[in-house]
Image 1 (cartoon, rainbow, N blue to C red):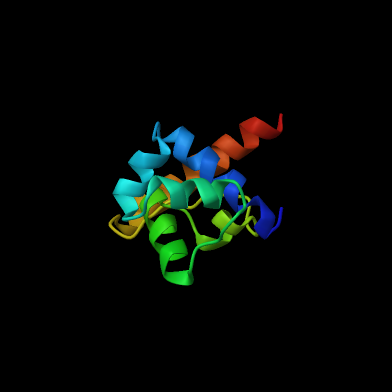
Image 2 (cartoon, rainbow, N blue to C red):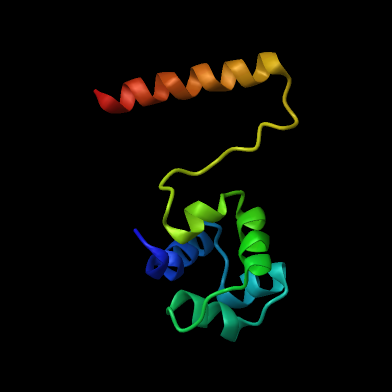
Length: 99
């Protein structure tokens, strides 16, 4: 993936959250037209807007730009014990998916 995939990634995230372009725009303070331009590769967001969109969807800016393929999970409010449990669970899912 590369930056040209930003629009595709944005559209996939928007649809996976059952949002219209207008709905996403309302959530992040942009117009439907701007979201449409982003999704169609006619325009790209500023760094500030890119960070805002990433925060809204709970992904990294690298993910939005196609640099990173995985999504992130915010563990900042969990205890160390809870974080360890989440990591073990993810490891088990990864093992099962490789079979």
